[in-house]
Image (cartoon, rainbow, N blue to C red; front, side, top):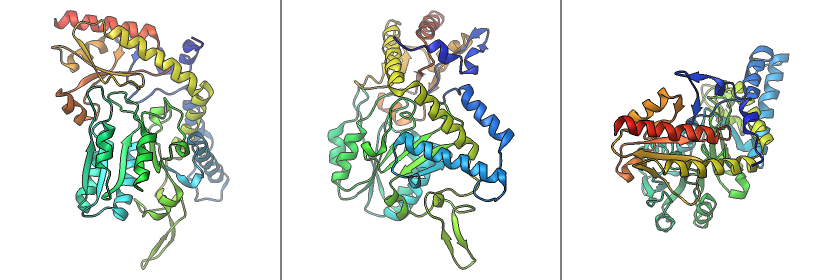
Amino acid sequence: MDFDVEKIRQDFPLLSQKVHGHPIVYFDNGATTQKPRQVIETVRRYYEEENASIHRGVHFLSERSTETYEKAREKVRKYINAASTNEVIFTSGTTGSINALAFSFGEKHLGPGTEVIITEMEHHSNIVPWQMVCERKGAKLKVVPFNEKGELVMAEFKKLLSDKTRIVAVTQISNSLGTINPVKEIIRLAHKSEVPVLVDGAQAIPHESIDVRDLDADFYAFSGHKAYGPNGIGVLYGKEKLLYDLPPYQGGGDMVDCVSFEKTTYDQLPFKFEAGTMNYIGAAGLATALDYISGIGLDRIREYEKYLLEYATMKLMTVSGLEIYGNAAEKISTISFLMDGIHPYDAGMVLDKLGIAVRTGTHCTQPVMDHFKITGTLRASMAFYNTTGEIDRLHAGLHRVREMFG
């Protein structure tokens, strides 16, 4: 395969270290990704050379910092193919984006007798904010189930859509099952009923080419740290006409036009939704991360990660008593599994002593675990800097777990 993973790995300093005397194997990319030197250098250089608060000064550093911040917004716009930078709002991450939309949209459009549709496989960040706003506004939350393979039951989604539905919020890719959902079809069906759709793209942004106009998504949320960028930065995309109609989520500096004790008027998009001093250095780092991904090529990344998924699935299926949860026909390089009779925390701790980092627990998707009547899983989530040799080490580590616990 024409993919020089060893050359790519040289860009990621953390991958060269040892844990408990073993070279680290990092299979927790679904939680957060490691950062290439290019991103680290961008953040370091910003602090050293141009750190100043954006939008509020006429001095040299402030103007240069503002220019870098707005160039990052344009970079995001281009990366997801938004129509305008007015549609790109910087947030603290996917959770911040969804909370902002749930509050603002709920204030404008939800009330008694109205409904919000989500799915059974959502991350807690796309469940709890909608529960909160439904409770506050007297609306109801409806849930689309998934089948035993981890695929949404689209027939049930069609049944739930009604004249009471005000918004659909759905994950593009499940963080615990790896399922790639048919969001384009979900959006098409929702739009037939004139219902807007929020797509949680946290897991999709590092793995898939995202074109919000091709999807026809009304809102789209993602985090920088899941896409090889800094922590504490994210994006909420929204169609301009919809964002224009929504009230701001937070008040404070930079989102205002004019303030008096009698009345405050708000700034234009996208600044109306960016209260306070934004994470402008995180935005610059995110722009560099998107450049880095583009430089490798998402088509090549997708092909290589598919190869990793197939190889890992084949290897793990040879481990005695191991069961994989989430076997959708379309999925990313994420495998959730259990070993019969062995608690995932115990297995995870043994793997850690072997230098192998996997995630254990519910992965912030407790309803998914309830669906399968389990308390949690081990999750190996792979990225383009992982190798088949690392999968072999995971495979050997799981055999060691089996030997220890019987």
